[in-house]
Amino acid sequence: MVEWWRHAVIYQVYPRSFADADGDGVGDLPGITARLGHLADLGVDALWLSPFYRSPMIDGGYDVSDYRDVDPVFGTLADFDDLLAEAHRLGLRVIVDIVPNHTSSRHPWFVEGRRDRYIFRDEPNGWRSLFGGPAWTQVADGQWYLHLFAPEQPDLNWHNPDVRAEFDDILRFWLDRGVDGFRVDVAHGMIKDLAGVTFFDHEDVHEIHRDWRKILDSYPGERMAVAEVFDTAPDRVARYVSVGELHQAFNFDFLEAPWDPAVLRRIIDASLAAAAAVGAPPTWVLSNHDRRRHVTRFGSVRRARAAVLLMLGLPGSAYLYQGEELGLPEVLDLPDEVRADPQWIRSGGTELGRDGCRVPLPWSGDAPPFGFGPGGSWLPQPADWAGLTVAAQRDDPGSTLHLYREALRLRRPATTLRWLDAPDGVLLFETETTRVAANLTAAPVPVEGPATPLLSSGGMAGELPPDTTAWWRIQPD
Image 1 (cartoon, rainbow, N blue to C red):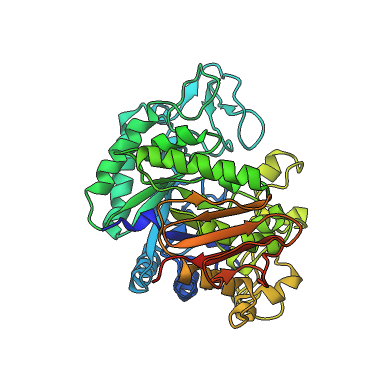
Image 2: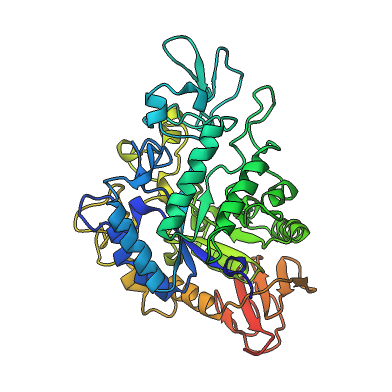
C-alpha cells in the first residue's frame, strides 16, 4: 500500500486567523474544531497547524516558551485533544509545527541563563537577521547571542546533547497524543558553522533528521514530517527527504515562481528529478503564512485558479494555505498601527511583512468580521470580501471554492509526468491518469484532449482560453 503522504493534499491552518470561538478577535483551537467540516467538505487529506504553543507572540507563535502546552489565547491541551479527535473522526490527519531552531527568550532555559543550550560568543560574526538588522544581541556581561530571526528568538545550540534529548521528548509528547506528523520549521538551520559564509544547510543537520525519522517510524500509522528548507538548490533539498530522513520538503522554487511557462517547466522538471533521485514524492505549494498570496502575486484570480489546477495535476503531494480556496488576495493596505509582523517592526516600516496574508478568514455575512467569531478580528478584513465568504461561494458553481472542491474530488494519485508537444506558452503533460493543459498566454490556443474536458479553471469552447488550465481523464476510474 502506498503511504498516504506521497499523494496527500494538506491544508495549512494559521490558528490566529482561521476561526474564533470565544469572541476575543483571535482564532483559537475550539474555533478550528467547529469549522473542520469545511476541510472535510473541501476534500483535503490532512491539516497542518501553525504553532499554538505557549508564546509571547513576538513572531506569531514561532517564538515558543513551552513546547508541551497550548497558549491560553488558543485554548487548552483538552481543546487540542478535542480538535484531534474530531479531525480523526472526519478522516483528516493532523500535522503540527515544531520549531527547533530557536526558542522564545521567555523559555525557561534562556530565563535561567542556560547559555550552554544557546549560541553565545564573546565576539559576533557579521551575520544578519532574516528579519533585518544584526543577528547578534549583546547581554549585560558583554557576551553576544545568536538569533537568525528576532532578538526574542535566541538560536539553540544543537551541539549540546541536552537540546537533542529535549526535542526527542517533545516529538514523543505530541506523537503520544496522536498527531500524524510534524512540519519542521527552518529544518536546515539547526547546525551552524560560525566561521562559514552561511548559516543554513550544514552537513551535520542530517544526523538530527535521521534520528527523528527513527522516532517517527517507531509509532504506528505512518507518522510523517515535512521540512521547511528555503534558499537551497533542489538537489540539496532532496537530501532532507533521502532514505532514512524526513518524508517531504516544501518546494519554495515552485512557490516563488512567476507566471512564466519556461520558468515553471524548468522548476517542475528539476523538482521531479531531485525527488526521483532519492525516492521521495515531489511537493507543491502556491501560498503560505510567510509569502504574499498567489492571487496578488500572479496578478489575478483567473491566473490563481489556473495555477491551482496546474499544481494539483502534478505528481506528488500538494499544500494549500487557508483562504486560497476562496480566492483571497493579499491585503496590502492594512493600517500601520495594526501590523504585528517583526519584519515590519525591525525594518522601520520599510517592509510590509507578512500580515497581509494572515488576515482572518471570511465565513459568512455581508460585513466584517464575516462570521470569523462573535467579536471583531485581530487584523481588519476588507469590506469587499463579502462576496468571497464561504457562505457566498458554497453553492455557486462558478466560484473558486467550487473549483477547489471539484479539483480535489477529481484529482487522482500520480507518480510520473510526460510532456507533450504544445503551442508556445502552453504547458501540456500527461500523468498516469490525467492530461493537463495550462495556457499561460494572453490569447486562446487550440489544445486537443482525449475526451471532453474533465475540469477547467476558466471555461472551454473548442480552444483553451488565456490564463486557463484544463484536465482530461485518460484512464477510466
